[in-house]
Image 1 (cartoon, rainbow, N blue to C red):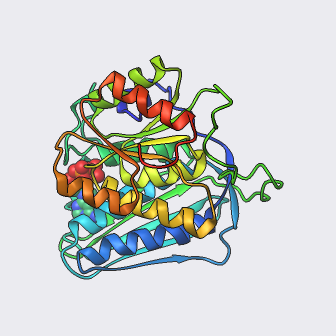
Image 2 (cartoon, rainbow, N blue to C red):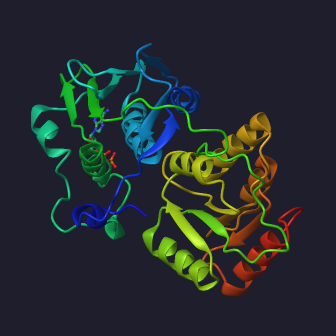
Length: 322
Ligand code: ADP
């Protein structure tokens, strides 16, 4: 889980792994277009031909920053468009990403303030929608990527958020070590290798609880906080099990699940067992999730025995309804 306190403590280390930047951006633009379209906005993403196919860096963190900026642009813009460009930065070897919207813009005073919000001892445990933590975290992540995040805006005439990042071109990994492995997901009955579990939960206390329960049952756990990060992390990690919170900021669990199932089908990947979690056991929600391809549902707070049954089911191959 990414928290400001962890960032401030310098505990966060970014990955340096090859990832397919152009393909990633192409997928991402479809997703963002859909988000924008829901609000009647046009979204275009233009990638300069000089942007490399494969780069070395942290795909999840890069995606998190891009998504945050794009999501803000969509959220604050009532009509018009959102334009994203990715190109080599002028006069250095970094990439420059710019997200421009036709929204209300940001006053000069606020331009100073928005990146500094909640810098004094705040942490993710107090996070709320609209807490202003997003840009503060983005700024720090961008710094860790060797770049800078800034904004230009004329109030009333939209805003452009731009960041640079050091993502050097690299060769595609040799066959077999590509980041999203095409190997089958379920470990099968014969092995008791620890299960890799990806948890999508934006509420920190719940996230901590789920992590603890899973780790007690010898799972390896990764926690992400929103639907966008789920899709990116799932692609990298290909977990044995995904526990997906139904309600998350930005893209909700159900939407994320739909995208994930679509990508599995497109790529011929094995099916990741997915268990939806929610505090509000509304039948309609369960039905919607099942239609998107969930395998089981759990009510929060999660029960230790129920979770154990889910893990057992995954260890046995995770097929059929749990
Ligand atoms: P949050 O969106 O959760 O408040 P952020 O840190 O992402 O947190 O943004 C902080 C503030 O910056 C927002 O509340 C908003 O006032 C302003 N802001 C961010 N992006 C935009 C944008 N594209 N257009 C106008 N205002 C923005």
